[in-house]
Image (cartoon, rainbow, N blue to C red; front, side, top):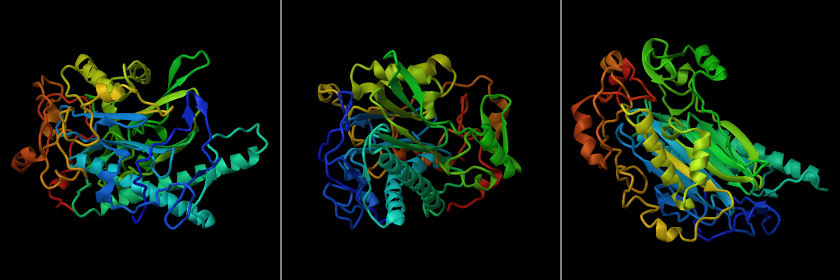
Length: 479
């Protein structure tokens, strides 16, 4: 994208310390772009390509922790882990953090999720540059981290907030559009019946900007007037039965209905075939449904953080299928160390899958925990030595991937998130136990993918993102 990002690992203090809000020095937060001079470090310090992203010290995309966050993913029992996640501190300048969780589905869903994880943040930076430059011809925006309407400069501050909000909204919209366009034309990645959700947030000072599609979710733990920790849902699960979503899909000749054996799961179907049965209304990829109402336009929202806001949790639906918002907040807040919060949350979800759905195959789980005071445990380095910012020792049993996440692209392991037509007829009848989740290299699954068509594993799968591939997709050559 020709975008510039900073590779400095200089540690900075959060704008919030010990519950108090502290404005950066100087009093404005600068956003610098290529070719613009700035007194503070910006992401124009170095130009990097997509292949150099894994070398950034403040960008974590595997089980690990950073200065103010921890992330963890675990493979379910449906095949290769199709979830991806990222935390990127000092995203474009100091005190700006990008977080994202991406849940892939379909034959190549794991590759789509990784591609979006790597490319979407860069596109967001590039679109932010274009949006800001187009507004005033400058590569610099000054914004005070906290707006105080009662202050003498309230009109000026509110104007700056509105401008920043509008700029981020436009950047999110353009970045998501560009991401979907790239997937459509990708020469080596067939996204016709594969796709991914995305829940992405940018924390800039005390401002929180959110863009999301699909059914991955973000919540926040915050203290109420009684100093009790409560859960605040930040995003909406964009399911096909939401009135706005269903109306658009039906207007585009798509169909929305639930299968008889899972009436609680509305799905999107082609007008001429009972496929693919996508369990969300918006997604990257899934181009077989893009003419029939499924879109990749994100919902966008902005929130001003306060001292009562404690942490934010992003997670894929493998967590939300078995844990409520309140349960997630309680688990994260009671973790013995902050650096272990994401892992403990995933472990809790895994236990709930076994208790609530003992005959079902557990879904993949991915979690990002961002602590808003910018602090982590001083003792966490000793307690969490197995954590690593690269996938070298794989505690979660996930397939080993290269730094750019593309190692497994030439040979794909069989994926178990689609049920065949035969299984649809017998679904619900005694399924055999699913194989235990184990660490599998991409090469190990090559022969499986070659020997048989992509279909569901016999047995019970509680909720798949897709039911089955369209009949014509079997004859469709890979793009």
